[in-house]
Length: 290
Length: 276
Image 1 (cartoon, rainbow over the protein chains, first blue to last red):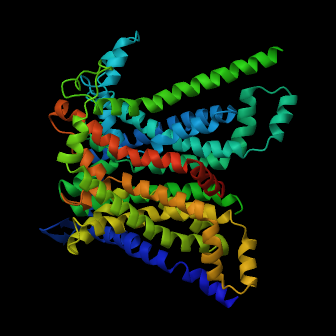
Image 2 (cartoon, chains in turn red, yellow; image 1 turned 120 degrees about the horizontal axis):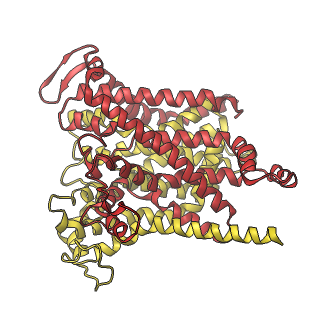
Image 3 (cartoon, chains in turn purple, cyan; image 1 turned 135 degrees about the horizontal axis):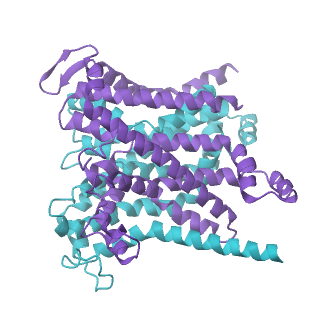
């Protein structure tokens, strides 16, 4: 018994070293830097909370929080809806289930930066195939949309690219949930003559509450860290209509070289995420026995 | 009879919609390969679908744009960081699965750790590497990727280890093995298919990373995604063929991996996510 207790902590030594040295220490270092006016090569000076208070007055920062929030909400709603619909469809299929699942899953394995570049090419107003195809279709005006250069549609384009790449992950989690559901309640409902929607709303959704919550959490966390699309597709523009938080912080750190201010923003982002994670943990996960 | 017809109709509709979705998913791949085979004069014409393939862009990307070198960089980084994170992750996963170390909160922390925004970590790591004079080295990217894929690796391994019955280790221990011997002589070989899947997936995550590699590498140590992003220039029309070829090659390892590990990935993800 003595050995067992020792072993279970001994096994964690490498993990603690790696995470401590390469994750917690750097994050602590970032927190320390965030209290300085820090320019690599130019030196630093202690400014207390100035980097944080400056954020509330930084109009660009507030605007990019807004863009991030819109992007995030759209991503959650669309990915959940589309992911759930596809999962339901695949769950109905008897033959060819694996075929569809494999093909529909491929975007998850693609490098986001490559997907972004491809999207930029395909949506390009003169060279792109998507505006070209829409021009052939009789839908009003769809062919004339400036997908990337109009402030109205640029964010929508990025949301759609994110949907293409992100929905498969939501789909696979929800499909795993659907496949593990017990069949009895559905048979009982069948006998009572319940409609498809009644079955979905009163049986499927309550039984899958946890997996839906985990899926939402994963979509949120996955979307909030998105950097590549804004960086390669629109470079934050036009104006700053697609300037999401990650890109904003990147520019502050590696274009303006203001490490202190960038670290403060990074910590704001971390605290937002920590808040979300803890909320979901205490609201849903903890109530279920391990 | 009416009910049966209705069911058949639903089935047909299901297949139709799924086929439509499959086209939406596959069309960008098709267009990418098609464009990479277009000659520079055709690349600016989205209305040309049939032509004689021209491998000029492929040749340029591999031979003139040093893609061999970047492929090698990405492979070295991916393989090394995968091996390191599997070594650390398997010990951690074993501790969590067999001894419930840290309880539900630790388990959940592993899930949340995968989602750490890279931008928050890349700033201090950049500064640390700068002061240690490790910028523009493969080493910097390798250790960064190790810590960034570690939570995911651990999460997967936890799922796979849980599927190996505990009794097998108990049996080995009755035969005189210590707990740790039972781990690497019994559990690891039995979980091998899962471990291989976790390795392939970790490799893909490392391969696909852009932000860490962008900040930590230089001209000589560029990875494939960073090099690919360099193909978008102001002369967009001229470079598009090369860009399409580069994107094609950047995506091949990931898509191959998808076909290899898809089935196990589903098991791993399901096992991991159902635990909460």
